[in-house]
Length: 263
Image 1 (cartoon, rainbow, N blue to C red):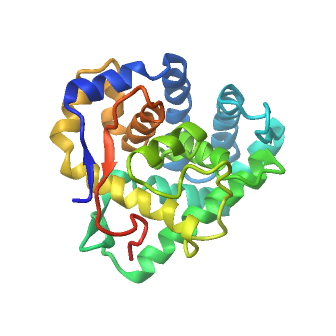
Image 2 (cartoon, rainbow, N blue to C red; image 1 turned 135 degrees about the vertical axis):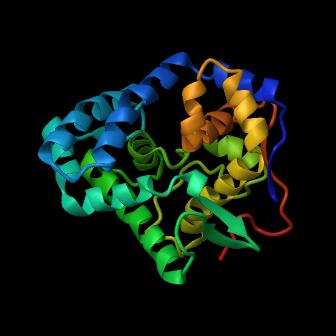
Image 3 (cartoon, one colour; image 1 turned 90 degrees about the vertical axis):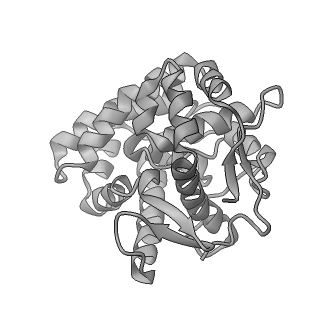
């Protein structure tokens, strides 16, 4: 298992509780709306219920400030979320959380459905269709991966967002090639940066399963037991916290090859 939780449960709990409380509150404000949106047929009502809190939290998380992209109007966000292709892609991601994906013999694998090349290709397609739809439909002139990944995290719970702190946390944990000044949103999963996004998910899924006792004990000892059902957010929090060099590295890659060279 090349990816490990290297901290004990007390350290995991301390990292969770040390994460800003407002960011925890923001996530759990939007995530139930995202779950309702992703698990029901596409509708204007579900899109409207999600759009306002999603927009509010994206602004709270820095969209529209400094060099971050501006957020589109509420009406534009509602229209994006109500589009059938966007909903289909986000629902597919929501249905395959980290707890249902893993790595086997250096190959990405699914735990809930047969692992065929067609299924892997479909996952990759849905991943990048969703990210590009969110980049275009929620933001103005967005080119980087950070904010589409934040939006996807809030809606589907699937993945860590590659903000600057998380990228530093990944780099400290042995994930080379992530701590760049800008992480431009790749077009698909076939280029190196696209593979980094897609491969990371499966490595984290394997880690969630392999270290389940340690992870569960850490989360259960924290003030945010809700993370037991949110593996994507759990890793987002830990990677953010280890992005500060004053904090210990708790998520660490020790593989013998490039970490994103999964098939």
